[in-house]
Amino acid sequence: MSILNHAMEVDTAELYRIFQEEYKKGTTCVQEKVQEADSYMVYKVWWYNVDEFSHVVNINWLTQEASCTCKKFEEMGILCVHILRIFNMFCVKKIPEKYTLDK
Image (cartoon, rainbow, N blue to C red; front, side, top):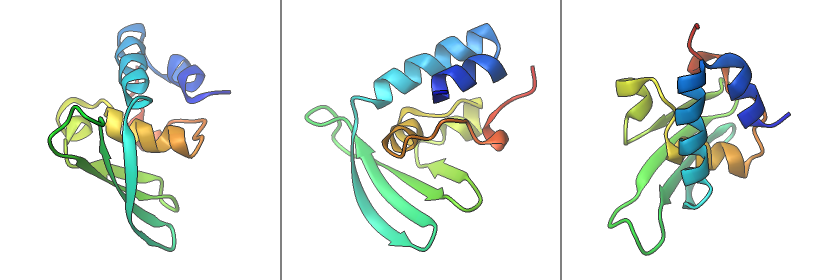
């Protein structure tokens, strides 16, 4: 099962379409690890030769919490390209439960 398949199962059709777009955009980003300690990692994520600055993604693999400086999830309830880039890099197959919305 891929994270896209899981999104199809847990999201509405409209949310899935948005998730799919964000995921596809995220696959074209690049990342750089900035910090790592135990289960906690920090990455800079950006589009090479496009973005003037990068967004910072904080991931705690133990608690499955992720945050990004773009604040898309906090403001719109949608995982951003930056977090999805890191999920994709680590082959995450399921959206952590705290990032799925009730239908």
